[in-house]
Length: 165
Image 1 (cartoon, rainbow, N blue to C red):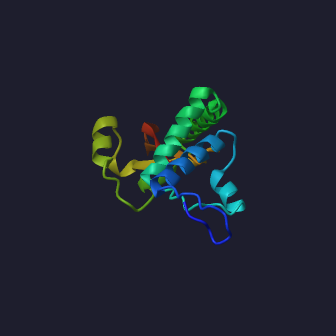
Image 2: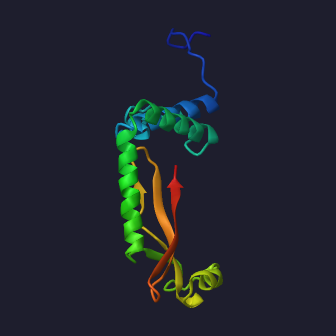
Image 3: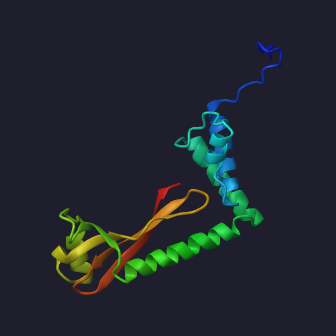
């Protein structure tokens, strides 16, 4: 450690991987209490240069989620995510999903022939649809994707797609 120009000792700097991992861990932990770590850092002008796209940040975030759920702090977030997922699925099953490929979009659906063979209907009537997106207090963002054929009233192969971790 050396002396800073103001006469105080310089603290050793953390490697970037450590900064990213600790920021991810902290953001996940704060998210359990409906707080946004990045907004807090910005407000206090202590961003520290955390790279939220790095694998270290995402690893720290995953550790924070696991720790929060293991201690019970994440139960409310888990309930909110579960309820949002059920609402999204209900939206898609009710035929209210937004088409993103295939019928009604002008963009070909690569799975159309397979869907026709497996579930019936005409390949031209199949569409890939999405629900509204949900963003949890931790920053986790997801939506439901499925295949829909409005003519034969079928919604199949629904799955959750995480769009932001």
